[in-house]
Length: 76
Image 1: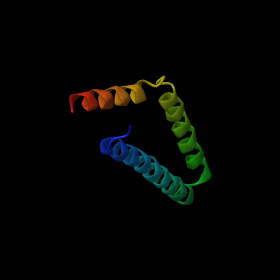
Image 2: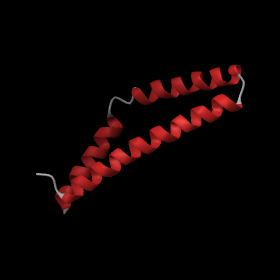
Image 3: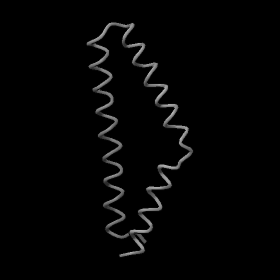
Image 4: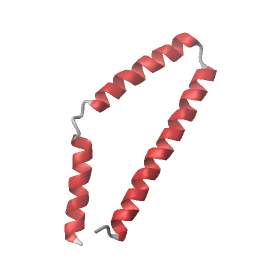
């Protein structure tokens, strides 16, 4: 059964995903309009390298957040 804390955590998680997606879209749009294509291509290359690195964390970040949330829930 979901508690009010679980619902609040889900809402914040969803909002953080939506807000970060919107800000990234605005960031890429601004960078595309500001810089020439060579610099923008280099920016995309560096962003993709960091994106691959973030994908290779093997879920340790998410599992850490999950374990902390479960531990906090048991303490309450």
